[in-house]
Length: 371
Image 1: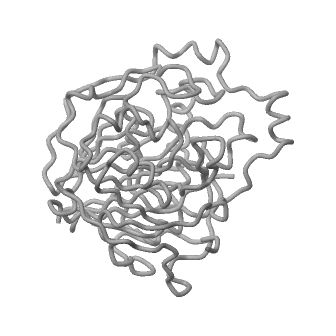
Image 2: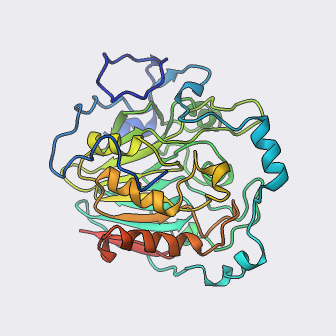
């Protein structure tokens, strides 16, 4: 496998995975930011370049390489970086930075009704969204637990109680870090629900008896009831145990309804060259769900987490019409003051000359609909 820094389609396509056909119930029933990027995003209405690959079959079994280290945008921290972090790193805000926890935006409300031509999103907190698109209801990186490994309990409640969720048609997972892949939450789901995951992560779900698990490499897609799910690169990494660093891939998702809206879910990512390439590959993104938190100290986290200004620049690189911030106001994962991501992203949006209405800075639990 070679590092995928080239534009997809610029070299002959190869399939690095061995495919073993399988069937399931679900398969049968569901037919430095602020700098210019090298490639301008595609204008709305332009054709993808290169054309999108044919969709992969739902639930196919694939064999992947043992490691995806060659997909890293930047090297993982070494001993010197860990020593510096031990000397001067801060993993939580100080008392002044925590003082605004009570002001974090939280406004739960009933979920909107969305027809197949409507895009609706509801922020449950962190990177968990209820996305209604193309007649489907999709969960992104669902984390309904009060606490995850290695962090304090969530500072805002989940925006939508589990028992008030509508029927979920599919789940997408961006990578295997505990704040994005939460086993207690996933245990609540029916085992035949279609799950879309990065390459190498399927075995985690299969061990838990999920029967329709679709693993995708970067730039690959699959379809469920007419909605296309495409897996795209991110500037991040993966690790869940002491021995599985980068053994599964990481990335974001493009959800495209037939003849309708297109949504980008970034998952977890730093800033870099992939955004403009994604924008060219998937033109006309209507909404980008972008992470804006967990970025301080910058020297430690800049390779894997966008700061608010970088998130705005990434949205411009994508050519996305709107942005909804996420990955903040839920778990305290780093040292910035708890309200700072919101104030900085609003300032950056205004400085970029963008319309206030196109920044969907939702409180936890709130929804927004695009007809």
